[in-house]
Length: 330
Image (cartoon, rainbow, N blue to C red; front, side):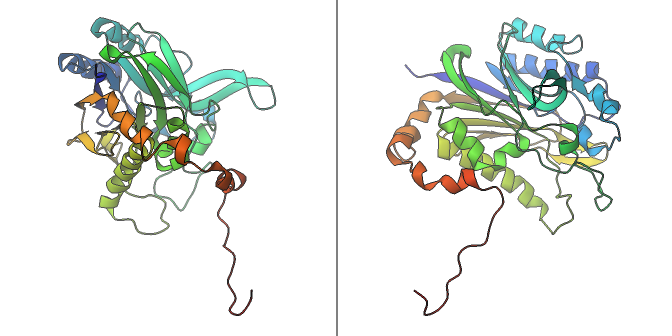
């Protein structure tokens, strides 16, 4: 008996700075209703799906940005999403800014800020949570940049690792679920940790600019999409998993996000792709048994991995120059 799961990627058009939660959540509920009509059993929303991508705006005091975060789920504003999940019998993935009151590395309980995603069961119960680990950008205002990218200012590095949870999803029964957020997709280590837990469905939201804003060299615009897709397709293929990469898209407060949400199978093929820069739902019928081929052949980790030779990956952060060969020296 095949384990089929109908998955929906709910790409969202731009969310302007002045747009309220009620408007955004209303858009999301309509996408969930469309997903239900198209037979989807799980819906994946983007990173920071409830607000504009606020790390582009500099605030001297981070508390001035707290309106962009959630301190609990469901809140009054997000409750309609949980109600829609129950009404339509659909699980959903939600990316958002999180305020958490919990101990830090020193054991002191304090207010902490994370770039977070949760997976919510159709019952409305939160199944598990992930906090973004690979934070791009910078922490302080950079006068050399036309647009700031202050994720390191507004978020701490995630402290939950890369969890995979086996939970019932739709008609497929128990599914091994994992999550990544935006820049995580570019780091093969993140995918491999999920793959080592036999992940079958990776839910991934992102908000990625259409241009490289670092001003440290030219990057052709079309390569932005290529590199995003390349990372997701490689991650799925090399870890024998389905992946749902879901974007925000369009002109958000004068800044272009490139969209191009995709659903990818375990052989690295794009099964569905968004073609607009607005709210758009794409759906794919996923046979989870496709994960078995890669996991039992090319990427049979137990048979072929050689961790005794991978020590440098854990021992080293930055790159270092290699040993230099000198002619005549043995």
